Structures are given as structure tokens and as C-alpha cells.
Amino acid sequence: MNSPEFFKRDHGLALPEIAKLTGAADPPGTARTIFNIGSLDRAGPRDLAFFDNKRYAASAAVTHAGACLTTAVLVNQLPAHVPPLIVAQPYRAFVQVARALFPDALRPSSLYPAGEFASAHVHKDARLEDGVTVEPGAVVGARAEIGSGSVVRANAVIGAGVRIGRDCVIGAGSVITDTLTGDRVTIHPGCKIGQDGFGYVMSGGRHQKIPQVGRVIIQDDVEVGAGTAIDRGAIHDTVIGEGSKIDNLVQIGHNALIGRHCILVAQVGISGSVTIGDYAMLGGKVGVADHNDIGERAMVAAGSRVISSIPAGERWGGYPARPRMEWLRGEASLRKLAGRDDAGMVRRGSANDGDTE
View 1: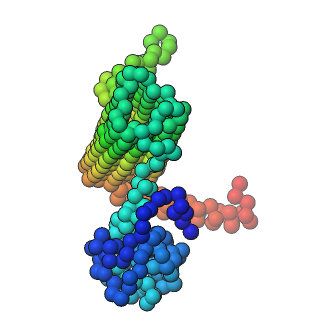
View 2 (view 1 turned 90 degrees about the vertical axis):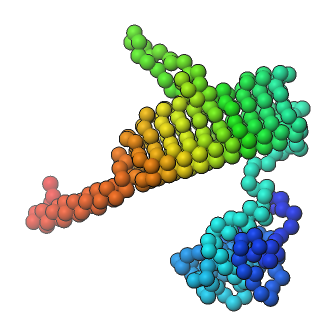
View 3 (view 1 turned 135 degrees about the vertical axis):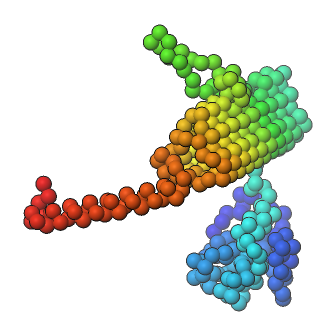
């Protein structure tokens, strides 16, 4: 069972409202109102579910959902007591409804009322627009600027000269230095953004630190997951493009240029001076070596190691990463080879009464 008490909602949605929102046909003969969302196997009479894959037909057949978004192909597998809402893409429609039911779940909320910052440490030379909330223990440095509607959560640090746009959220315990952000940016707790990049040169038998004099630029509508680190540039800015979504525990090195609407899943590591094109997607634990380019709309499979540039639109995977079909053929060949070797070991063992030494 979900716990909607954590998220405010003013009212539910009647089925005609859901139909209008999603473009579905209004199911006849029902005035039911939906207040919550749920999976097929757990949804109750006040919940909305979705059914978009025949693998879940068994759950669909016994669901108690108050209504279900599904396709014309699958609709006959729902129980007669469940009103169907037929759409082309049930999951997309389900997300639309969930966003309408729970608007407060779309960004972290503050523990304090808008405009509160009396208990925080805000430098006298900082500039805060009306409606900015800075929670207790947070620090806002000299010349920092924060736009209206933004929230700085407890114990976060906004460094000197940092600019935070409007309707942003800076998560608890985050540290933001040498950074400019756009509007509607969400930084989840524990992020470290704008620290110097990892750059040294050997001189006289010692590692000499290279000054990192660039910035981090985070454009509008970016979301950065908890515990992520983004280094400022060394000789030019590190840039995160508009609408990109970065998962938890991602490392982005100095001078990296991340395009618009990219997806970087948990534990991705981006080395310095990497360029990633618009709409690219990197699965969890992908590592990208320095000075490589990943083209627009390219996709890299989870766990891959990228040591050369990837052309636009291609799908790569493996260690080292290579085009998808080449990678899969290589994996298949290895499995066949391993199978032959295993069989050979069994035959040799049988000839020696089980002693393979």
C-alpha cells in the first residue's frame, strides 16, 4: 500500500477528468473518482492502475483497481467490474494522471514556510528575491543570488557569488560553489557541485596542482540526484544542458559538456573534457574515459567502459564499449567457447576416474 499521507492533494479525479487528461474514451455508466495510484496486484477501488504488457495478464485478471489504463488489444483481459480507459500508451497516461494527483511529489518540499530564512546564516551582501526559503543551518555566502520560489534545505552551503535561479531546490547538506544555475533546478541532498577538478602535473618528482578556474553551468529544468559530484571546469566551464536528469552518485569531471535532455543513471563516471550530445542515455555504472565524445541520442549499456568516441544515434555496450551487435556477437562467441572448454574438462576428468589434476 502506498503512503499518500506524505504528499498533499486537494481532491481526486473523476473518470471523465482522467479521460480528458489522457485522451481516453470515457467509460460509460460510472461516476467513480480516483484518489490514488497503484500496481495491478495492489490497487483498490479508489486507485488507478495501468496494464500495458500481456506478461501481467494474471494480475490484470484479478485486479481490484478503481480504473485501469490499457490498450485496445489488452482490454478484454480486465475484469468486468474494472472500468477501462483505452489509450495508445498506458504508462505515459498513468504518469500524466499521477502528476495531476500528486503535484507536490514533483519537487522536494520545504519544512518551513516560503520566505523564511531568519534561522539561517545569510551574508549581508547576498541577494534573495521575495519568497526564498533558507532552512536552519544553511549558509549563503557573499554576493550569492537566489531567485524567488527557491528553497535551500537545512545545512546546505551556497558559496560566494553563486547564482541560483527561480523555483529551484538545493537539497540538505549540499555544497554549491562556483556555479550558475537556471530555473527549476533540483539538487538532491548531499551533492557537491563546483569543487575543483582532479588535475595535477608531475614536476620535480611531485604532483603540482593545476588551477581550476572555470565554473559549473546548470541550465533550466535539470535534476541532480543525491550524492552526485560535478567538478568545475579547469580552463572552460563544465556545463549540464537543459532538462538533463542525473541519478544518484554520479561523478562528472572538469570541462565536461553534457547536452540537453540527457539521462545519466546511478554511478556513471564522466572523466574530464568529455562531450555528451543531446538526448544521450548512459546506463548505470558506465565509465567514460577523458576527451571522448558521445554523440546525440547515443545509448550506452549499463556497466560499459567507453574508451573511444561513439557516433550519434548508435547503441554501444561492453568492456571496452563497442557497437551493440558486435558486443553481443562477441559475448555469444565467448559463451560457446566456454561451453566447449567445460565439455573438454568433463571428458578428461571421466578418463581419470574424476581426478582432473
